[in-house]
Amino acid sequence: MRRKLTILVLIAIGTVLTLSSVALAQEAGQATTKSWFWWFVWPGGGIIGILLILIDMATWALIIEHFMNIRRTTILPDPVQQQIDQMVGEKRYRDVIEYTSTEPSMLSYVIHQSLTEAAHGYGAMERAMEEGAEERTTKLLRKIELLNIIGNVGPMLGLLGTVFGMIMAFSKIVEEAGMPQPEKLAESVGIALVTTFWGLIVAIPALAVYALMRNRIDALASETMTAAQSVLSSFRPGGKSNG
Image (tube, rainbow, N blue to C red; front, side, top):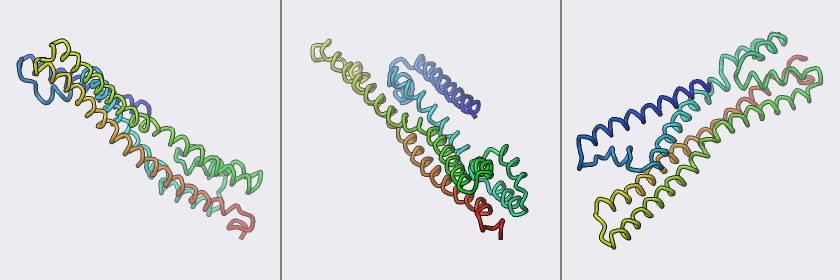
C-alpha cells in the first residue's frame, strides 16, 4: 500500500517537473509575453506556489489511494461475509478462526478477535469484538487525518504567499518613489493572487474528501459491527448454536 502511494507521489512530482520544463522552454521563446501557464504553474506563485503545487499533487495521490482502499469491497466484502456465515451455519468454528486470521478485511479482523475469546464466555467475545472494531476504525480515521491537516495548512500557505506578494509590491512602490513600473508591480501582485488560488485548490478537495471518507468509515464500521454481531449471536447462550 505504501509502495503504491510512493509511486503515485513520484509520478505526480515528475508531472510537475515536466510541465515546469515545458514552461521554461516556452518562456525562452517568448521574452515579453507570459502565458497563463507561467502565472499558475511556474513560477507565478514563487517558491510558495511551487510548494503548494507539489502538496496538491501529493493530496491527489492520497485521495486516489483512499478511494482504492477505503470501500466496501475491502472493509466489508460480501463474499467474505457469505463464507463466514456458511462456516458458522455448519458449525465449523475452527475453520472460521483460521480463515479470519489471514483474511485482511475489517469484518474478518473483528470476528477473529471475538472468536479467540470464546473460552472466556460470551461477554468477553462481545468486548473483543467492540475493541477490534474500534481499533480498526481508529486506524482508518488516523489514515485520512493527513487530508484534514493538508486542508487546513493549504490556505495558510496561500495566505503566507499573499502577504509575501503584497510586501514585495509595496517594496517596489517605495523603491520607485511611488511610481513603479506596472509589470514589476503586477508580478508581485500575481504572486499574492496565485498562491491564494493554489491554497484553495489544495484545501477544497482535501477537506471534501476527508469529510466523505470519514462518513464512509463510520458507515462501514457500523455495518461491520452489525454483521459481526449477527455471527456472534450463534454463540449467545440460548442462541442459534444451542437451539
